[in-house]
Image (cartoon, rainbow, N blue to C red; front, side, top):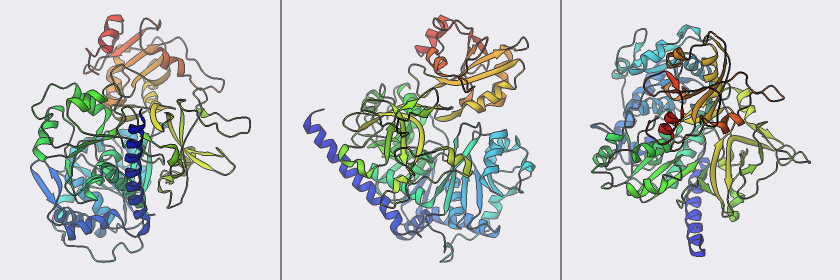
Length: 600
């Protein structure tokens, strides 16, 4: 990189970083101002600006606020207020945003439930939320019916919207009778940015989802950071096809434009065939991506609107470097804003200047304002390496290590917060103490990153028992539990393997089985027990599993072996997409998979 380019990129970084830190600092200057106040101010100051586009319907800021007021009055009538939680299980539509804004208006918190969940994981998510009311989209009635709603430690009152659901009260009828005018002044008196606003769920190593706490400060901080990173204005329109229960879709994408008077364009689900039609129809200027979405678009046939559009920027994470230039060039997108972060984490990075492959940058002269460190990591023990003095060892440039974020409660270092999870013991597991000095505390990201001499960070891999596939975190323990209950399975070791041309890692399982095991029946069993993204694609039958000296299953060699039949001499099988059954994996099938002839 030449000197002129380096100076230019330093200027870009400094300008964007100052803008971002300014917006984050503003959150703490008014501790009683929440997202509800932001939207109420927009409804007063720019009531006719379009806030939400959905299919052929638009909602102005006046409409958005008014609809949320109905939800707030419904909640108040149920005795819901500060300290209460309402669970929300609904697919993407405007009512989703109305509902959680209305809940926040009362001072209560909303638990945003993953729409893919059923059975045990869904029951667990609802249980740990502390909610005694559930807003249920009728389209997800079958998901809810898969659990025993009487098994919670508190009664759960279910309210359906968008259709009738047996056993649920009709929320739409109740809302229709609620006034939509502004709520009484002082309704949220006593509610501050330190109070919890949302629970967003993230996979853990226990096999069950964890509920990450997002106080109002964190919600506004995330929104402000992305709005600043995108330099968004009231003229911008964000196209959002990601699920609203995820922080990427429901917080980052939504907040980027709605906090500055712009618009958000919501689609129920991502569609490659309709993507460019929507971008053209609604005049989108921004869109939020994950890496898989970009790959799907790149693999799709040419579209008449794919270069004839108003997009000025795409923001997201997981865009692999091998497709980045081709994606940006083919679709004529002026700027990509790749970022690194987690819903609950305190390590946040943005690649402001668009260097291909980087997830962010912290130049040496700006290190004091950022709280990220990379430390050497032992993949066998899955712990940071400590030196003779007992402290962690910082990585050299180009060396991969686990990313840590120093935990602080300093408003001048707003990215240092770690608010944890609903369960205290889960919070403690993510904290590394005495990392560099006695008494310090650092958040463990569970991710391996590396940083070059110019300060650019690059994502290397996830560590531990969770990997990403199809944009979702897959818990190996959850998958293992579903497999080990299958007849004939004695042991199961689940891990993720890299597939050329694919983002994330595909699920693979090594199984020790007895004579009662039927590989033909395993596919239908997994179809019944697991969501699509969590089902293993590859199966390896072994006579025994290798364990460490601490009796933990070893994954390192299995991951290295992958699913190549010329390397692996154990029997291998492939879960054929759309057929839900495993077939023998030979060299011909292997070549079809890695060449992309078989789409995963």
